[in-house]
Image (cartoon, rainbow, N blue to C red):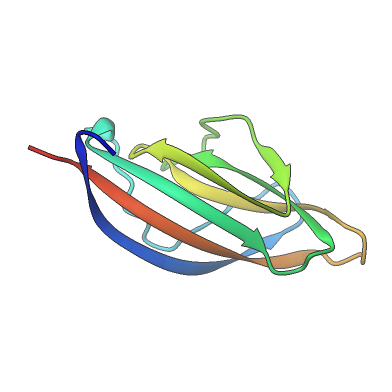
Length: 111
């Protein structure tokens, strides 16, 4: 990506529950200042294929930064003021949770 260098890549698993609480990645490197100095590309997939997950980016205080999107898999990108967040919306097998496999690329502004 022009103007940015790939800093690191990693994979996490997040447990998303039904309800109103957002599940996030432990110690995700978001910031409250200099948000445009880093960018994230995120791919995700619900392990339970019968479930629908809502996903978005949230701030440090869990404020939703973008309208949630529903699905069983997808991708998203955002700047450093937000972190990916997940919650289970529904399931055809009546589950109340699903694990979500998340792959993250962190890009930092190049000098």
